[in-house]
Length: 167
Length: 158
Image (cartoon, rainbow over all chains, first blue to last red; front, side, top):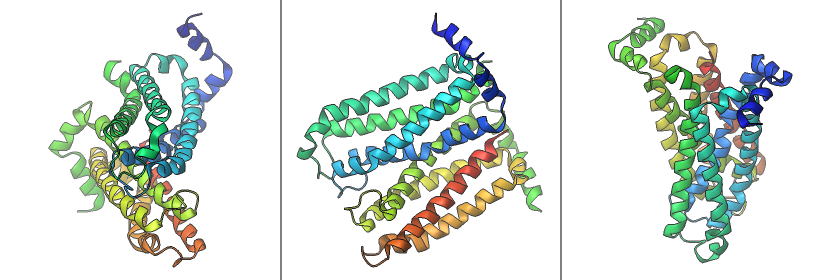
């Protein structure tokens, strides 16, 4: 079964239709998805700015990471859950949305970026933990993360305009 | 000129007409507005979570607050600038939405609160302010910002 056929079938399940047609539940989930941006991207952003040496420069990087990352992860969990529900409400429309695909690609890259960072450079955090401005490689990670987060937000916002622009 | 007349004049003025005609102006400005949300969210949470005692416990609040305040201010500049542009595009719609005025009231309240009470508590030396007072300040701040954000999302719905 192709991915398209699967999503087509998913869209015919009764919960998907009910969710799609419900006025308030859908808008409520959408609201939670948009507003949790301030927790997920907000805390990620502060971590990235610390990696760039632009804020909280007298706080060790490892402390910023260990204290804020749980909030980023909690926010991420809410984002993924509500995002999955929003996808489930209209699987084919989301799948065929060019900005949705773009958003998922940027999201995957953002996750890989963080994962590689934690596996490699961050392992030797002790060497640059207290540097007000961390080494170049670390700053690159922060800058890339900021760029990808901006792309995710942009693509997410643009998803609403595909039909208006290209329909 | 009444407020409604002003909104009408704003919305139907020539430059605003051009902006609304553009298919990308509103989406792009709305996107930048969302990025401002993230920036404010981060800058507010770092301090409020610390005041609540659930993050960065071994850092003095004052140092964090001073750093975060700069980013909060930058976020506010982005938000207010893009917000005014978004408002102008559909001024009369927002004029009639109760939630818009709730949002504006909450915004003014939180700005006043942040740069008076919260600032004093956050910049005080550790131990000078009771933990309960700190927590109360953090909760009020988060509640007001949430009201602003919810209002913002609500007025965007069709």
